Image (cartoon, rainbow, N blue to C red; front, side, top):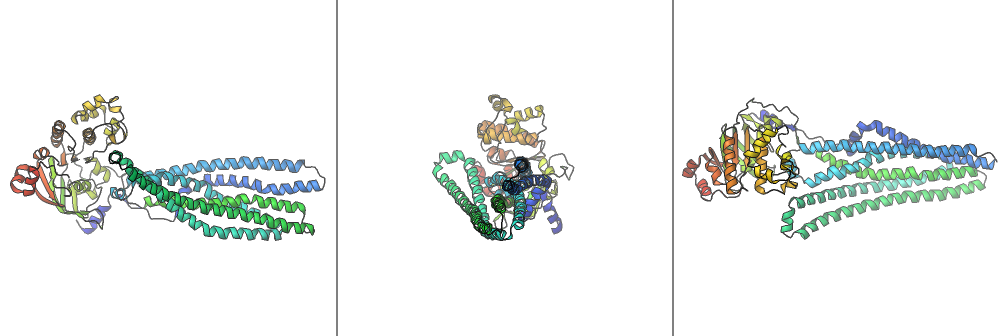
Amino acid sequence: MTEVAQHAGEQEGRTPPDTPKAPLRRLWEYARPHSGALLLGGFLSFLGGAAGLAQPLVAKLVIDALAQDQTLTRPLLLLGVLLLTGALVSALGAYVLGRTGESVVLTVRRQLLTRLLRLRVGAVDRLKPGDLVSRLTSDTTLLRSVVTNSLTNVVTGSLLLIGGVVLMAVMDAILFGVTMAVLVVVGLVMGVVLPRISRATVAGQAAVGEMGALLERLFGAFRTVKASGAERHEGERLETAAHTAWRKGVQVAAWSALSGTVAGFAVNIAFLAVLGMGGVRVAAGELEVSSLIAFLLLLFYLMEPLAMLVQAATEMQSGLAAVHRIDEVATLEREEVDAAPESPTGSNGPATVAFADVTFRYAPDAPMVHHGVTFEAPSGGLTALVGPSGAGKTTVFSLLERFYDATSGAVLLDGVDVRNWPLPALRAAIGYVEQDAPVLDGTLRQNLVMAAPQATAEEIDAVVRTARLEELVARLPDGLDSAIGHRGTTISGGERQRVAIARALLRRPRLLLMDEATSQLDAANETALKQVMLDAARETSVMVVAHRLSTVTSADRIVVMEAGRVRAVGTHAELVATDELYRDLAASQLLTAS
């Protein structure tokens, strides 16, 4: 394969990661599809605020009417209408914004779920699942308050603040100057405080993600932790992460409290200054008493939009930190799984497998796992991979499934490089039984049909018999529809392996990969499963990482691997006669851990 062709092949089935964007720009991308609803909610909130902004002016009319001995009916009625209208419109605006915020969060969670499910295995292996869960839950929840409150409050608060300031300037230029001096002080303080809130928030959310990762790690091996008496040690690690999150949260709370206190204190100072300056001017006959009262009421009213802006700016820092963490997932390389599932070869029979001088390492700075692996497995039959621990046997399966791509060389299925196969077609042709045979939380039926959701009842019954699961189905209270617990904790290890084998067989694969599938079975079940493999090998190609000698002796061909290389290929009799390592493995019943 030429260098250009190889490069093109490496890109088949992959979606390039998104380009990182500034958090504000990404936030706008999330909010833009809902811009109409946001504008409506913001406009209603502004109308409610504007109704409040007009109340000091109406209060001036009331005072003037009292001074001139006029009727109060009209100004009081107008004041009541403003109060009621403002309250109703503000409530409606809050509802529209809250509903829109939930819609934005739903959109982001859907996008994030899609990205998480399509991440390449290598990307997930480098990350911590608990931290990914934290990004999907707590970070997206923070995003809701930013979209609904921060964005609209910034606009609404700014407009109301500007409107109030303009009214003040019209009413009295001197008192307006005093108020502006206070606003400048608040602005300077916020310029110092906000970056500190942002840094503390990012660190705090990272600590929460680390705590989630530690919890996932702990519950993933809960019985081992209990049996090892390691509760205190694991608890100390969780305590450290929780304390870090607490410390950063306290920093955010302290800076937020400082910003709010400075804003409120500044308004109170402004009130005293306006009261003193206004009183002097009223005494001098330069200002009406009603104008001073209206100005003071307006100043108090401006506390709300000012506090709104301070809170919005504080929340914005948390939201932008959440956007940054969510956006990090978008920059990870993911798989394209929506391609058409057609096979590039059009073949429906047992698949052929070939490795051509394959080298592989898990990361650019990691040691080589494969050093020029070359072998062929023809169509049909049983091929066994044997060798000591670290030989690279399981990695063969990872490269076939394209969980990882070869560093160099070619991995061929039906003579076509797997990088040139559409991923859905490649994986539809392969059944894979992992070494630890994972079983998902849910019913036995849900686990069996996970890879073949359209399977009929007859097909399910057939694989149940093939995998010798009849006794398990009979024992469970609801048969196939019985829940089998988180990670299959209610069934035995051998039963979990047989469930995994049945799940793979139900897909009717052209290539069946079994990674030490008999390692947890007793002698009777091992014999039964060996027969399952031999039966499957008559209709499809079967490759197994062999753990027991009985499996190997039945293989049509055996690939002996050592230290990332293929040492020998042949039948059991041929290898016993010609290969010293294989003779040693056979003598020890191949029970070396793989």
